[in-house]
Every structure is written in structure tokens, then in C-alpha cells.
Length: 136
Image (cartoon, rainbow, N blue to C red; front, side):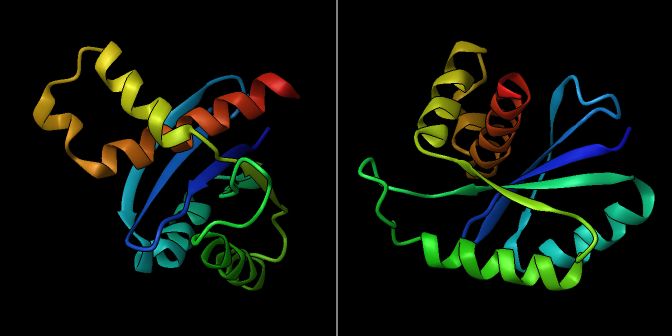
């Protein structure tokens, strides 16, 4: 089987998580500068087989767009152009950053490590991916 990759897309940083080849466990991959996303994925896809891209869709509680929703929609279009053979699915990303921050505290992560915003992005992507795996 191939992996599933999950993207927590942001204006500055993007968190990435990936499954194992059997699609059982979601693991944090990395956080990169958003402008490096496409080059990073091109290299990653040469090394690993990926069958699905998940991307967090930012919505308000009433399902209206947030300020970040247009950014994510533009990113989806870029991803579809660059990787037409890999399907892309949107997943709900509401509360993932707050849940990621809380998880870091519960895991006993040091305060200085919790301040690294990239850690939140990476853990949020992992949480979205794990939830996707549990729901299918």
C-alpha cells in the first residue's frame, strides 16, 4: 500500500504528517516554509509512494469561510496541477491547533518547545490524519 500525506497549510508555515505504508499510524513528518511545499513534495513523492493528499480546510463553526480558506483553495489548485495523479481530499481542521497545543502540554513538552509554532502545525496535521484514519 501507499502512504497518505496530510497538510496543515498556512500562510508562512505548513505542517506535514504521513501514514506508514499500511496506513495504520499517522506520524508527524515536518514543518516547512509554505513557499517550499511543492519542491518538498516533489522530492518526497520520488522517494515514497503516496496515494492520497489530505489538506486541512479552515472553516468557521457555522461552515463559513475563514480568512485562510482562500489560501487553502489556491493551494489545492496548485497541488492538483503539480500532482494530477494523486487525489486530494479536504478534511475539517477546526480546533486542531488548539488541540495540538493542549496535546503538547499533556505530553510534557517543554515550554520552549511548545512556543515553536512549527510544532503546533506538524502536530495539527498528525491529528487530522489520525482522525481521518479512524473514521474510514
